[in-house]
Length: 116
Image (cartoon, rainbow, N blue to C red; front, side, top):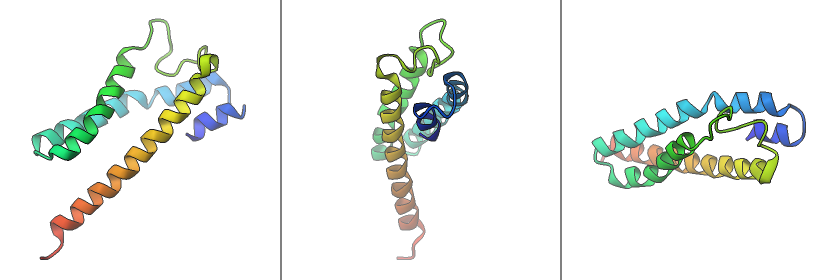
């Protein structure tokens, strides 16, 4: 979010912004897919179903990068067609999702280890 807002305010150029963001795309896809599979294996159905659409979206977004682009975030296209605003919205939604998951995981952890 900070990197995208820096690009929006012209504090950094599009190429450095996109290279910073693209280096985190693959770890995000792998990490979210691993968490989703672990929730399936451990039979946490609600959390698995909550994570499945986000993991699917991350994989879809990574696979559908047009050939010739630098990655998911491309400096030649980030200012075109409102992509900067859509990337910013997506980052805010993901932040909200991860905050929700964090507190949900924390709540489940406290319930599991709390004495009864």
